[in-house]
Image 1 (spheres, rainbow, N blue to C red):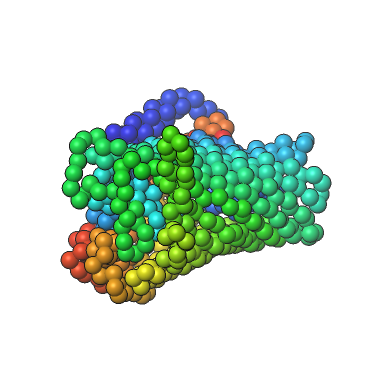
Image 2 (image 1 turned 90 degrees about the vertical axis):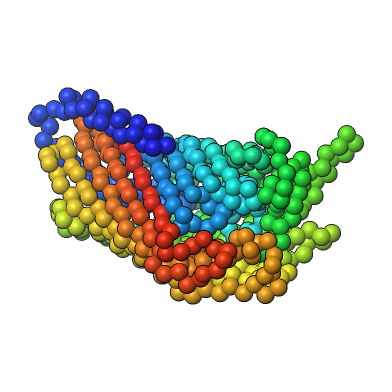
Length: 517
């Protein structure tokens, strides 16, 4: 992957030298809002594409972009089932286009990436649940993964009259997680979502939107042994909660699926200074099935299910003044879930509650060089997991604060350079780890002690990035190189089963090239 990052850098330099000859000497146009694209485009898009009917309110202009990026991170500050090293190369295109004559507005993006992930124990499926489910595939033997991803999102919005607009949306994502070590696993997952919504103008720059969507996800792992293997480290397990591992045969056929409707509501107000609030809520059910096929009959049995309720709230406040622009953004996600195991009837075995809040305030001063862009972010997380069989409980609450600012230098109307520095500190507020009767259980010994030590650790992160922008006729070219380092500051949990200590760290390197027009 380091070679791929060098290739990206070579492409940038080649493109810059090639296009330099195309620069017109009499081009005296000022640089567009180049180095601040994240402020004007990336964060606002999270608000306006949340509900497809709200795209009618997008006022930051049409654009198209294509970019390639490389990411690399390595270190031992991690949980046991995460990787020592990750490498990724991605391509992304994105666009907003308007047809003013027919009152249509379109948004679309396409992403594709390939990545490699090295050295993780107790990880057979790569996938870790983002909704709090404990159910996943495990193997003690350390392994590597190759991952391929492709995804697209499209929104079509039609303004019917001055009061009403409608929006239709589609999301599609495909992933292949391929475990390339000893015991192999080709784990295919497909995710799709179709949505529809209506936006109604209440008057005086006030808008209300209502919408719904249908979400569907499925996956199927396929196992095989590249070599003859034996011994406990090669046993295949299915994690049932915060206690037991259930072993299974390599010939087993597991199927993973999740499908449910979602509902949306949002409210916008303001013209130049805008405020919005959007909410989605839904009940979901994720299942793991086992299919047994013979010449006479095919049976499917639901082994485990996870029922959950997810709430997501977005608020934004955009203030536009001549001397500065300010964008405030809050994203909050609350999930409560219950896990069940099929023992003839479904038995409740697991409870989960999780709250994540991301609050961001970003200030842009278009005419300034020093502190041209400054931001403050707060990240709050509170998680609670309890195994109902063994009363094993893990709770932790953390708060992180990130500060970022920078300096910009415009050399001429066609070239600019920016240096941004950031500092983040994560503080554990409290944690609880009660093993009760699960002290000798596989999950406790192999995963839980290390997991608690990682999440209860305080750490600091320092980093920065350099961004170079070049204007070429009606196009902009942006190259970015960034670096971050994470070091623990305090480790309140220390035991023989944890690898987390003050000597562990993690480094991140990212580079990207983007062309937009």
